[in-house]
Length: 51
Image (tube, rainbow, N blue to C red; front, top):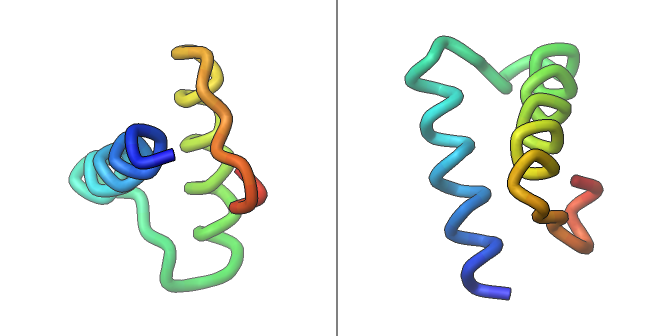
């Protein structure tokens, strides 16, 4: 849904501001895990993105 996509992009940007990077596969996995963890805290799950 649109709300979920906006949440994901906003969170992704905030994580970059906080110093997370996703250029290397290892770092991207770490960042995606953090996204998943934070979204779960708010009761959201993004379908189709592996998050």
